[in-house]
Structures are given as C-alpha cells and as structure tokens.
Amino acid sequence: MQQSPRTGREGDVLAVVSQSGPTVSFFDAASDRRLGDVQVPAEPHEVCFDATQRLLWCTLTYRSGYYHANSGRRTELAVIDPDTRRVVEIVDLAPEHGPHGLALDTARGRLYVSVEGGEDRPGGVVVIDTATRRPMGRIDTDAPGPHWFAIDPAGTTGYATNKEAPFVSVVDLGRGVLTAKVEVPGSEGLAVSADGAYVFVAGPYGTFSGTAEGRPAPGVRVIDARTASVVDTLPTQDIVLPVHLTSTGRLLVGEVRMAPDPESRLGRNAPGRLTVFSADTRKQLGEIEVGLFPLTITSSPDGRLAYVACAVSSTVDVVDLETLARSARLDIPKLGEAGAHGMAYVPRPA
Image (cartoon, rainbow, N blue to C red):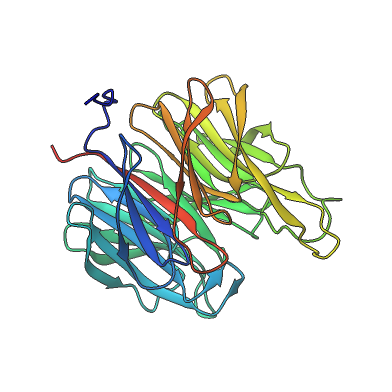
C-alpha cells in the first residue's frame, strides 16, 4: 500500500466553530480528514487555543443571530479539551454579555475577552486567569461593541476594534485603562505585527446595506503603535472582515463580495476573496477566490497554509500560500444561515 507523503503536520488538528451547528469540528491537519464534533451551547463564535493549559476557549455570543440582529446576548465561554474532544467547563461572565473576541497572553496566563456594552456600562474587555478560569478584571473601551481584540507580542498593549464607533480603542493591559482612540471609520478584524510596531485594521464597518456612495473606501488601515495614528491604507476591492498575520509575514485579508439582487436590499453573496499582502512592504502579493462570506482566517505555524472560514457557504478553504492554490475545502455542519466561524490550529501534544 502506498503511503501518503509526510507534511510535518501529522498529529496536528484544526478546530472549527459552527455558529449554527452549534458545534466545534476537528480535522486532521495533515490529511484534512474530519475527526469528530463537539456539541456546545448556542451560539458559538470565536475560539482560541491555550498551549500551556492545552485547552480551547470558545465564546458563546448570542442566543441566535449575529451583531445587531440577535435574539439576545449570551454570557458564557465554553472550555474544551481538544484531545478528548469534550467540554470540560462552561465559564459564566455575567453580568457581562456578548463575549466575542479572544486574545491570549500565555506568558502571563491571561485571556482577554471582548464584551458588549449595556445601559449601565460601555463595552470592554474581561481579563481571565487561564489557570483558575475565573475573571480577574475588566478594561473599559468606551465603545458599545468592541468585537475583535488583539494584543502586542509584549503583552503590554491591547487593541479593540469597534464596529460602529469611529475609532479603535487602545488599552494599557498592565494598568487596565484606555489610553488612546485611533480614528478609523468603523472597524472589523485586526492583527498586530510581530514586532508590535504596527496594527492592521479592517475598515469600514461591514453593514452591507444601502449604497456605497459616500462611505469610506474599503481596505486595511495601518496604525503606527508608537503614535497611535493611521499612517497608511492598503486598498481592497470589497469590504474586509477578517485580517490575519502569518509567521512568515504575510498579511491575509478576507474580502466579502455581494452581487446585485433586485429582490434583496442587501444583495446576494458572491464568492469571497482571500487577498495576500506583504506586511513589510505593504504590497499585494496575490489573491484567490474562496467561499461565501469569509469571516475568520488562521494559518499553520509554518506559515505555509491559510485556512479561510466562510460563514454562508459553511466551508473552510485550505490555501497553499506558496502557490496561492486551494488544496482542500472542508465542509462544516450548520443548521441555520451562518455556519463556519472561528478557528484554532492545535499542534500535537509534545
């Protein structure tokens, strides 16, 4: 029997959230074979992997629906063992609600979770001790809906993107305070450069309603972390939601494309686009068509493969970044309109 060539990813696993599943699916990273699913409470959105505790953290954001169109906000996180593929705990953050963005500082054992505001408080970031799995503080972001959150490699500064608020919130993680607001016309996904010098932010906010006339041009705003100001914009053809930076310095951008539809004010989904830039030169390196409504992007630790989760088609496109060719398409279970959402790459146990 002929053996499959080794990829260097043997034993690694890709975890993929289905928003309407509601599940987390596991795939063999070497063969793309589906290994199984874990049922979680509705409605999971994002996920991250803590290699120190060897656990997955998954936000349970809404009871159904999505930002600005949901039946109520949840207050919990699901903690999952990726090796046994079971939920080990549900952590309740109440009265905080709408948990979504996740950022992990393994050196300090801190997990940062963005939460939405309410009548009595602005949106913010909850700080969790990853050893005890309990909240230990909150940082206000002075915006109603901080949706995505990222930290610099030093673990000293955090950045929250705010969909409808016209700024990115900059917070001092040590002091737990808001320190700056960077003017951006509504923002989506973001990524911080390997040296912490720049932050790449998708904008404007993807409302997908009305006409584009009068709206800021879509693209990726480049923020200088030292001055907390926008110093460049990487132009794109369509609205950008996810932004991801690989270990090799490629900036991966997911563009959502809508085609005209006389029966729908929003139009209909057309195949999305993965656009690749060099983070250093800020030049576009290429692009490739992906599934419908790209919502999350991650990559393999070696930076060779990109994984693009597309919510409407409920697929994950596996893209070879050297050739910009799709090597596989993973089907993610869904019960409602939106399926594939958050992803985490889980290396094999040491």
